Structure formats: structure tokens, C-alpha cells
Length: 234
Image (cartoon, rainbow, N blue to C red; front, side, top):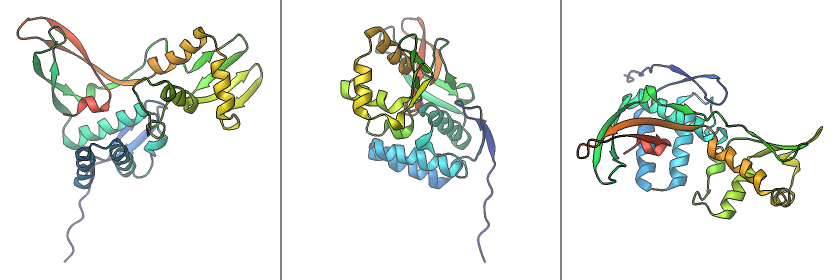
């Protein structure tokens, strides 16, 4: 006699980048196992592959995580985790006023959202006639990226995220621009224009939740930002 097939509840969420409604199911034991194995390996590539595989499986193949903006990946994954293992998580954080006292906090994942700064724009004005249209880094873009501020890594990420360059009525698509041409274009920018380009990355949407903690020793209250997917795991 065949074993019974287990049914799973389906939920909906909106992708932060587009507002599109997506159906998803919670993690199953097989996805939780995949994630645990990847985390134990301490291999960033394995963790990225696990995220991508779980998001695809839990959205019934509707989402390809490798081509989603990173903030979409983080938000979708956190929502799935909340539905799978509980919407309230406990974390231990360091009080910033003395940088040595640790306190336990509880976060409701329903309250965690993508934050966008008011001044953010994906259009970088270079001159009166020339502007760059940027796209957000995807999970695929982050593969192999060295986020330590190294110059080569920074320029590589900029190259990856340039979508179009507009020169008056002429539009240059990224696929038609060689890396050499793009490097020469970027290197010819003024420092002020390059700072605008950097500001795109600094102000782009991110998974961010702020909590207020009270240091039991100093009695001082401080607001702490919990930022990025990994910050919600212990």
C-alpha cells in the first residue's frame, strides 16, 4: 500500500522589485536539509546554490533566483523561512554603546521589509546629455564577487550592473559595449559623476530591520540595524 501524499499550504508575496504577486510554499524537510548542508560547508558558492534551488522549488519553478536582484532573493527567502520554521526568531546582538554586552532579542519576520532610501535612483547623470541606467546586482552577479572594497571588484560590479548608456537620443545597450569601451568611459568620468555612480550601490534597496535594545549594564537604549539575510541566522 502506497504511503499518503502530504499536501502543503500555499502563500503569496509581492516581489519588492516589481510588485508582482508570487505563490510559494514553505520549506520541506528536503529543503531544510539542503540549507543545513550548505551552511555547514561554509562555502559561499554552495550557499548561493542552495538559496537558488530552494527558491525555485518553493515557488513551483516560477522564480530563477540567479536572475533576481539580491534584495528580492533575501526577502523571498526570509518569507519562506518564516512560514517554514516560525515567524519569530531570536538573535543575540552586541550593545554598541560599550561593544561588549550581549543581549537577546526577538524579531517578527512579518515586520522585516526592504528599505529604500528616498534619494535613491537608478539613473546616473554624467553630463547634461549623457546618463547611465543601472540595474540591480543579481545573485549571479554576486558569484565570485569580493566585497572587500578591492578596486578590481568594484569596477567589475559596476560593469555588470550598467544596463544602458544614453547619449541624447542615442541608446547604447550593455550587450553592445565591450568591457574595454566601458572601462574607458568610466575612467573618463569626473570624480563627482563617479560618486553618483557609487551612490547607486550605497542607497539601493536592502533587507533592513531596526531594533531598539537596552544595555542592562549602562541602561542606555540604542537602535541597531539588522541588515542582510545572513544577519537573521545564528
